[in-house]
Image 1 (cartoon, rainbow, N blue to C red):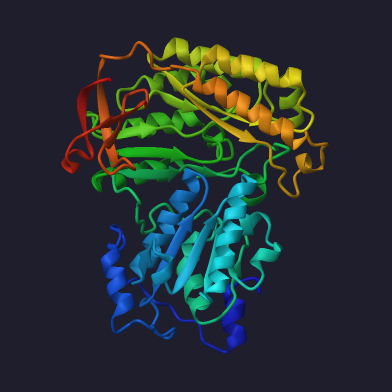
Image 2: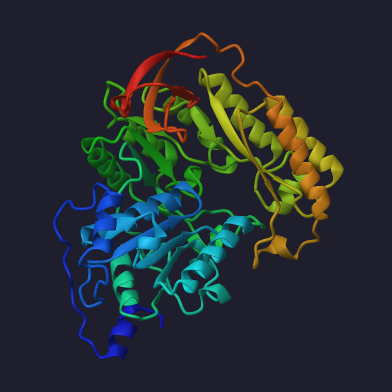
Length: 465
C-alpha cells in the first residue's frame, strides 16, 4: 500500500475526519502516572474502535531534527487524546523515530523492532530509515511513515491500531511549523529551518532520506519564533542537516534569516539563540555577517562545524566540497571576530583509503586547535552509498585510530585559565545525576550548578570552577 487512502478503500470504509480533543492540548506532556492509570484501570484493553484512548510509547534516535519531529508527532497524538509514554510495557502501540547516520543507531532500532514484534504490539516506524531504505527486511509487516509526513502521524497510528499496515512515504510539501508540539524540555524549542541538503557526501545515507534542500520561509520561521517566545521558551535551537545552506532554494540565505530572528529576541536576554550544525562550504561567503550575529548578546558564541578529516585527499574521497584550508578559514575568521568563540567538530576515523599520513594530518589539526568538543566516529559503510563500495581500512586499524584520537582529545584542557571568571549562564535543564542544574555560558560552555528547580528557565551570574 502506498497511502492511507488506499487502505481505507480496500477495507470498504468511508474516510472520516476526527478533530483534535481541544485546542491547545498537547503543549504539555502527560504525566507518566496518568498514562499508567489509563492502562491499569477500566480502559486496560482499549478498543481499536475508540481512537484516542490508547497509550503510545515513543523512542527517538538521532539528531535534534529528529527530536523536533518526535515532539511534533507527540503533540499531534496528545491533541487527539492519546497518552504519550516513555514506558514500552504500558503502551498499546510503539512509535520508533529512526536515524540512519550510523550503523549502531540502526542496529539499536533493529533490536527495538524485534522486541516489539516479540511482545506482539502494533508498531509504527518513522524517520530516516524507512524513508531512505524502504525495502529493509526489518520493516516488513510494520507501518512506516516518512520524514515529510509527520503531520499525518495520527492517521497512521489509528489505522495501525485497527490492524492495517500503512506505508506513507511519498514526498509532499514541508510539514507546517505551527503543528501541536510536546517539547521534551519546555524551555527549549528545536526549530527546523530546512530539510535535506545540497551536498552529495559519498558516505551519507541521510541525503537518501531527507532529500534535496527544502527551506522554510523567513516569515514563517520568524512567526514561529514569536509564538514560542510567548510560550515561555528560553532557548531556540536552529536545526537542519546543514544550516549554512538555508534559503538557497528560495532566494534567501542564513544571515538574512538570523538577523530577522535576532530582531525578535527579548532585549533582556531571557531567550537565547543557538545556531545549528553548518558545513564549511556554505558559510565561507558570509563569515563576517555570521560573526556579527554570533556577537549579539542573545546568541550563543558557538558553532558546530564538522571537518571530518584533516586530509584533503580524504575530504576529496568523501566529496565534502571544501579543503582543510577552507575549514581553517572558517575557524580562524570567527575566532578573530567573535570574542570567546567556541567550536565543536566531527571526525570520521578510517574512511576508505585513509592512510597513516592522512590520519596524522587529522591528529595534527585537532592538536593545533584543541577544540572543546570533538565527536569521533569510526567509519561505518551505509548500504547504497558510494563509500560502501570503496576498499575498507581494516577494522583493527580503524579502532586503533579512533582510540588514539580519543586519547589526544582527552588530553586537552580547553577551559584552562577560565577558572574564577564570572560569567552569565542560562539554565535550562536538570543534569542526569538529578542533583545539579545545567547552564551554559555565552560560549555555550556547560556549567553544573546546585540550585533549586525554580532556577530553570532563568539566567544568573556564576563564578566558573
